[in-house]
Each structure stands twice: as C-alpha cells, then as structure tokens.
Amino acid sequence: MPAPEAPVTFGASTHGLRGDYRDMRPDYTVTQRYGAYSEADQDRWRRLYARQIRLVPGRACPEFLRVIDTLGYEQGIPRFDEVNERLGRATGWQVVAVPGLLPEPVFFGHLAERRFPVTVWLREESEFDYIVEPDVFHDFFGHVPLLFDPVFADYMQAYGRGGQKADGLHALEYLARLYWYTVEFGLVRTDAGLRVYGAGILSSPAEVSYALASPEPRRIGFDLKRVMRTRYKIDSFQQTYFVIDDFGQLFRETAPDFTPLYARIAGLDPYPADTVLPQDQLFGPVED
Ligand code: HBI
Ligand code: FE
Image 1 (cartoon, rainbow, N blue to C red):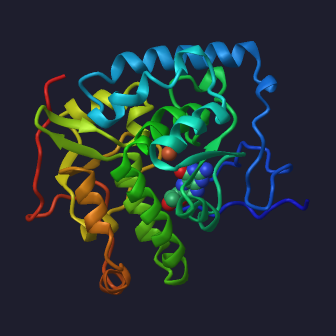
Image 2: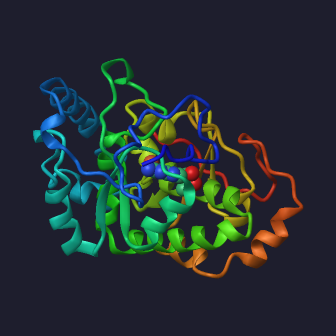
C-alpha cells in the first residue's frame, strides 16, 4: 500500500508521527499483535497503571471510577478482544486498533459507527511522565472507561456524526476545540465537588490534580459557542477547563444541527486560551 497522506489534525504537533502506517487496512485499522509487546513494555504498562490508579479516587468522575478497576488493566496491556466483549455488552461500542493519530474524517467515521480508535503502541521509558501523541495507555486508561457509560457513549457517536458533517462546512476547527475541551480536558460538577472526565487529564500523572486544585487555570461553565471559539495549548497544562453539569448536558447541547452556529462563529476572532469574559461562570480550585 502506498504511504498514506500525513494525517491532518488541528492542534497536532509538527514532529513526525510515531506509528507505523504501512500495514493498515483502508479504514486505518491494524491487528494487535499481542506477542510483539516486550516484557519491558508490559512492565512499563503496569507501572503507568499503578501510578495512575492511585491518583483517580476523589478526582475522576463516578462513571469512570465505576469501571476502571474492573477491566483487568493491572495485569498488563489489555487485549482488544477481551475489552470488546465487555464494552459491546455495555454500550455496543468497540475499540479498534490503529497506528496512531488518524486524519479527522477517518477518525469521525469510526466514532459515528461506535468504534473508538485505540493506538496499539506504548510510549517509551523516556516518555513515562509525558507524551504528546496518544498511545495505548492514554487511549485505554483515559477514553475506554467512559465508553461504558450509555450517555457519554451516545455523545461520542453524535460527535463523530457532527464531525463528518463539519468537514464539508469547513468547521473542523470548531469541532476539534469542542473535542479538546470535553472529551480530552473536560471537568464535571458532582454533589461531591468538581471531578475530571477528560481523558487527557485522567491519563496524566500531574494534570489530574492540577486541573482540579491549582489556582492557576480558569475553570469556566460550559458554553458551546464559547468553547468553539477558544484556542487551546497542546504542549502544556491547559490554561482553561470547561465544566459541564453532567453528560446529559453534553449530549443535549450538542444534539442540534451546528450549521447556524458555525455561520455565526465564522466571522468572529477566536479567544486566546487564557481569556476570561464578563459572562463566564467561574469555578474556584478544589482542595487537593
Ligand atoms: N486520531 N487515533 C486518533 N485519536 C484521536 O484522539 C484523534 C485522532 N485524529 C483526530 C483527532 N483526534 C482530533 O483532531 C479531534 O479533533 C477529533
Ligand atoms: Fe485522547
């Protein structure tokens, strides 16, 4: 197969992508070759998991905590087949193995069909604390648990369908910001206080407490149009987090056709990532 075009992703870094895109199928999926993971990989996975699972109680949202320790992640890198058996029964979602970041239209196509693309490879030892691209740990630890929640699962599919549509409307940038500030870096209010549901935070050893407890970042009540206009940083902690009331709000607010919204935003300047507007609903840091 000829080398595919380099995936175009908004906000992605300029360094080359890590994955091996040679042996994939036309839909960018590959087969997980479980025997190809080394014992060092398995050991690194177990250490990543052990570190992160200690950090999430009292910080991750209940929907995440309900499933994270039922998935057998402590044993080693998960097998796609085994996760799929349980995930399929819960919400009809499946994970598919991919070489890494996908071009947006391909990524959206999978989500629209209730398939979540999970990167097959694991980060190197030198990236133990921080990695720019998604790897198998980020995807399985951060994203997969929430796909067990029926409301969040439906939001992800609706997002994929919206993405397919936005492509033709030149609005991918707006949808990328929505994804970033919800699926990757979202916070949610609960009766017990603010909690994390964004996968980028949940899989990060340092940001999981920073996002909730640091006095530095802004925490702003979710406002769809505001989110779509807000730039983001990909190589540092976030300067702003958006806070939803619950997953139902996410699904409801993103259910309507975005076409008129895109038209209204199109002429407007984006906000820098650290903007605070007079109408923003601000949340203070929580005690760590
Ligand atoms: N591909 N594998 C993978 N994982 C992602 O999270 C991902 C992607 N391609 C595009 C993308 N995310 C973002 O640009 C979002 O805007 C969807
Ligand atoms: Fe991610």
